[in-house]
Image (cartoon, rainbow, N blue to C red; front, side, top):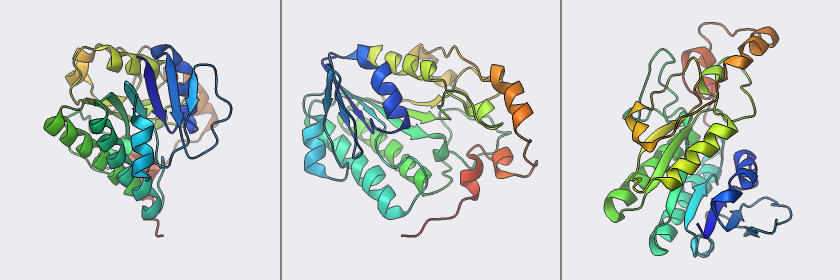
Length: 264
């Protein structure tokens, strides 16, 4: 690619992928409302509020691909979530439609399906069961991506990310963990396949235990290589196991399922 846009580039995953995806394009265009620091030689820094339609159109212009991490990444009040995750996603897709429909990696979340029980194994045909306003906003993004694909042919990989950190942090993450290396491999495949469409897939490594089945998108050719299993003894030894009826044991979305609605 000539130019790859990464939104939310100052956030946790955005900051990591800023360095790890540089090989995919001649230029990385990085955007956030937070401080992006200094630009590397192959970077363009473009501050942008996703709720600003005109700014988003200018941001997307000239880009060959988009990795969309931007927006509110945890539960919060509706006014914040709706600006970034509802209006912002609409603005992004409208901008993409007007500027050649660059392929998009949409960072959805396991919280779009958080109220499924952990003893259920679900695939990419599972209907949404969001566990809060943040999850609802991700369901909206998934639906918008689907509509723009069916109506205009806009290609998007909808990635329901599990827990992407250097290592799993608790017992639930032994099932939901996605290593950074496996995530990079996934994004590489998304931009490499000749025809993408608009698949839903789960961002999860090759863990010994997991709730999610990616066999329906095996055609993508992504084969995660890492596993949370080497961290199991560390977590067992450092953290008490939660009670059997605790939300982080019962539900795929964990404690988000027990969170309240945040009023403005």
